[in-house]
Image 1 (cartoon, rainbow, N blue to C red):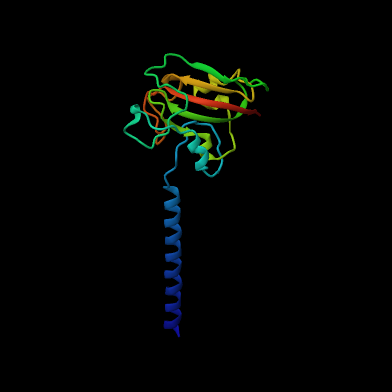
Image 2: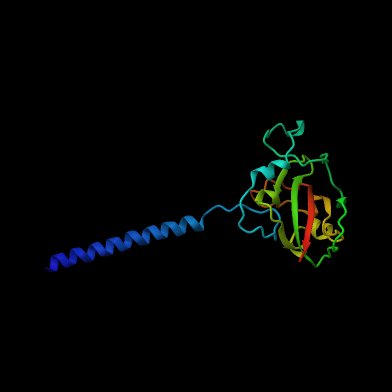
Length: 192
């Protein structure tokens, strides 16, 4: 009888070790999961699904400047520039709502591209139809200085020198080269 009890105890212990091993493996995999880096630090996009049909609307056929990647999306209506010396704010649609201040939290739709190529690295529309919301104090200087003065309902193109963007340290995996000047089309949806 003692022999049977010992075998049952060993079975329980082995089962326990196997279960703990699987749990440990699952935790290890989750902890080491590669995360996508959002180049607009401070923007909370939440958990949303990508709407491919909306993302494709931002695309234009590849240009000769982008022969290396035939699948790259090009920012509509933007002519690439080799160097941006200062922040440019170009209102393409002047809004009629409340005006944004530097201390505000805003909700926007945006599309960002590398200024030298026009290649889009990210669009809020890639995350769904809801705008993204963030404090202007928590993003790159080009946005902190470029959004105030916009009115709700307006669209502004920000052409940003590298030192007001990410400089030599762009977010890993963002598709933004080091020391890249950037361009963003930003639609101000709401001020929180």
